Image (cartoon, rainbow, N blue to C red; front, side, top):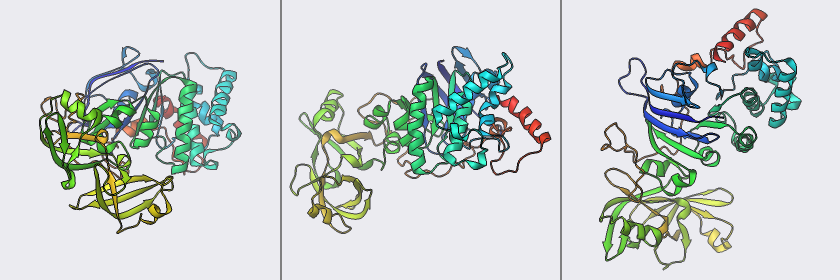
Length: 445
């Protein structure tokens, strides 16, 4: 078990003027589960590979268990890593794939009995005992992923690294494997660093989340902190599905009460948010008002803070409707309406063209400065440059994340990390080729 500390870590690729990762600072506690999350090209996988030793560090230091490891080879860092595309040997059985890193161990050399015990224990935990004699081509995607996790589990490691291990799986299998990773974490109880572009994985797995964009840390915090108190507009829009509604409006003050005026309606900021605006003595100004789709509720006509909207699209999700609606002034919003308590009459109105009334309370409101895009109610700010006066700005978060095609996520160092990794679809290698692969795998291990 070990702590991990990254201090002013930078990555600049040869021939590039701009850094891929900028002054990354993070302290990871022993046995903590940290998730790096962000859109494609944000530098999350590059940061993970610098911790693993698969990428050279351009600046700063990485410490594992109090030891600076900048110049150590991956095999000397006491880490285990699970890759996105499994990296299994097609000519070896499941048992041999899992046992492979143990057979490479030299000091001390492990006995066959101990190897057998470790492999069978890992297989039992992952539910793949019945597949130990099979080869990877006879396994499903989820089973192959379990084998890759098992190969990392059997090593004695201080830090467990996972680089988007579920991205190749279908939605149902992702949900199942996500639950299994939570259970796995409880069993092996070590320090985890997990990379994903899926905010659902980040929210469900992480003790803390590091939200990144363009190589910068946008916010570090618990899932609850990022959801309820986003530091800036980017985090607010990236965390949560569907993404937060944002409306450009005015924040005004009358006496001790604050008001916002979206869609031409004057709405009072009530509850703790109104009190906090007063305590922080926030001046009236133009702002971005943020409201999450699940915090917009269906109300009767004439209800307090209620306003009419026209349904444009109704996405039936089973337990809830995702309504794409338009206000009287043309502003488009997304509203999540649970179906369980709707009457038949209300369900009948949930069709395109119908007018319904919705509302949101003051406690559901988020306020972002129009210039800096910082949350007006938090002090946890992150900056885009070494100059702390320069904020990170992004009005639009990616609602649909494309495949990782950016050069940031596919540097040449990946070849170094996986030079011993065979292609899943390749034919079985000849013995000479097998020896060559084992030699190359030894470099990585």
